[in-house]
Image 1 (cartoon, rainbow, N blue to C red):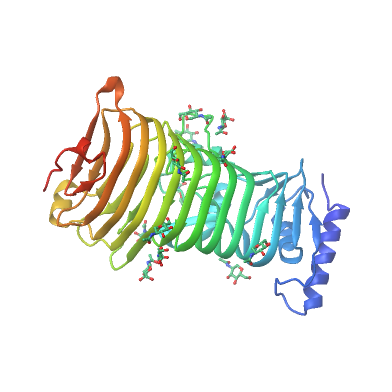
Image 2 (image 1 turned 45 degrees about the vertical axis):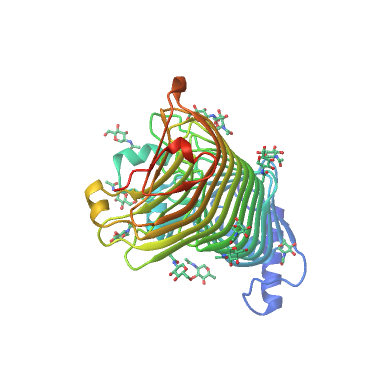
Length: 403
Ligand SMILES: *[C@@H]1O[C@H](CO)[C@@H](O)[C@H](O)[C@H]1NC(C)=O
Ligand SMILES: *[C@@H]1O[C@H](CO)[C@@H](O)[C@H](O)[C@H]1NC(C)=O
Ligand SMILES: *[C@@H]1O[C@H](CO)[C@@H](O)[C@H](O)[C@H]1NC(C)=O
Ligand SMILES: *[C@@H]1O[C@H](CO)[C@@H](O)[C@H](O)[C@H]1NC(C)=O
Ligand SMILES: *[C@@H]1O[C@H](CO)[C@@H](O)[C@H](O)[C@H]1NC(C)=O
Ligand SMILES: *[C@@H]1O[C@H](CO)[C@@H](O)[C@H](O)[C@H]1NC(C)=O
Ligand SMILES: *[C@@H]1O[C@H](CO)[C@@H](O)[C@H](O)[C@H]1NC(C)=O
Ligand SMILES: *[C@@H]1O[C@H](CO)[C@@H](O)[C@H](O)[C@H]1NC(C)=O
Ligand SMILES: *[C@@H]1O[C@H](CO)[C@@H](O)[C@H](O)[C@H]1NC(C)=O
Ligand SMILES: *[C@@H]1O[C@H](CO)[C@@H](O)[C@H](O)[C@H]1NC(C)=O
Ligand SMILES: *[C@@H]1O[C@H](CO)[C@@H](O)[C@H](O)[C@H]1NC(C)=O
Ligand SMILES: *[C@@H]1O[C@H](CO)[C@@H](O)[C@H](O)[C@H]1NC(C)=O
């Protein structure tokens, strides 16, 4: 498939026309321009970028694999539909990406692909392939290896990602960074390793500084959080998703960085299946000297079924903090109005729920209703600290320990 095909030449011409007609490199288009890409046999990033800048619909047909060898800056797009029927594959050239992937200041992350702007659709039934195996195998030899997040929806408004499969992310699959009105629907995420090396940090979705995000009707097989609400995630709905092998549906971790105030507010996670997981619904906040602060408020976890989950329900206000440091410097993250309702299934260990708050009323209005959780062989325990629980399952916890 060497050389530019007639179609890619056409795309290139159209791109030039659109850009020169506008007399500017503005990515806004007056009319619909539909483009179809074919594999170039070389790095397909340049033609993909040119098409995204010049065409309103970019189709990657079934049977076509775009080989992406260099980073994709698709920020500031407007009215763009990427119709991915084939595959976009990020070539695992580790030295290239460790030097050139886009830097994201939050947690010193990097990413292959920034996609942002307004009115963006990515759909079509195709696959985004992170080619993670080379990264999974390189990590044990280099613990500081910077592995890219596959896709970052970055500074966007009104973006929809629908009917897409993403596989083998080197790190998180998706970061939603500084966006409003984002929907993910009908997505399959799957990280699997063919060697003994683990699929580390393969979070499904992380949401950061974003408002009005929906993730629904999706299936995830991964090795870290299924969905994670990072600082300043507001008005988020997660609905009808099935998570296998994950670390949970997680608020946080929050309050990590000195001088930074983290908010997670108005989150609902409903109709969720968690299998072979470390946690189910989970809230984690840092404590210790010199950490940050925050507010977790109005969080609903409803209709979870769990199976082989180590700890079905978790609040941990001493996340990554020693017991002694946590006692001396309790968490500065306030947790209010958290509603657990209809969480059922089988835990992998006898302790099925652990709601551990920092003292002095840092957790309030936490309700537990219709919990139906059992440990192995019916040996089941519920544990809590420094919180007054309400709801028809509060008695399962007995009196919470005060510290
Ligand atoms: C991405 O492209 C935009 C628009 O051309 C530019 O302003 C921005 O600096 C680029 N971002 C990075 C990280 O290179
Ligand atoms: C990010 O990298 C800087 C510079 O290497 C380092 O000081 C900082 O601790 C890192 N932050 C995190 C969260 O790892
Ligand atoms: C959101 O984007 C979609 C797809 O481009 C478009 O059809 C719709 O009108 C946009 N909605 C708003 C409110 O702009
Ligand atoms: C990692 O190191 C081990 C032991 O030195 C070596 O066998 C293996 O080939 C290395 N893996 C990679 C991907 O470099
Ligand atoms: C480990 O990865 C880092 C960052 O990705 C890189 O700078 C460093 O050179 C790598 N170390 C080795 C020994 O390859
Ligand atoms: C839930 O999501 C699955 C795909 O994961 C889909 O097949 C099913 O139709 C969805 N259910 C509802 C009620 O939308
Ligand atoms: C993930 O991929 C593996 C290997 O191809 C497959 O066995 C498994 O069923 C897939 N899981 C999901 C959820 O698609
Ligand atoms: C679910 O996770 C288990 C344990 O991690 C794994 O063995 C299994 O292949 C996964 N199933 C699917 C359908 O991906
Ligand atoms: C979160 O939003 C609040 C209120 O707007 C702001 O003060 C804070 O700096 C934001 N935190 C982060 C991590 O962006
Ligand atoms: C949370 O929802 C309430 C009620 O709809 C709304 O008033 C409030 O502004 C929302 N909070 C945020 C941070 O959007
Ligand atoms: C709580 O958040 C939900 C969305 O998750 C929202 O519908 C509701 O209005 C919020 N309630 C309050 C009192 O803010
Ligand atoms: C949660 O499950 C209950 C009982 O099965 C059902 O009545 C309710 O509609 C579900 N909630 C949502 C938001 O789907």
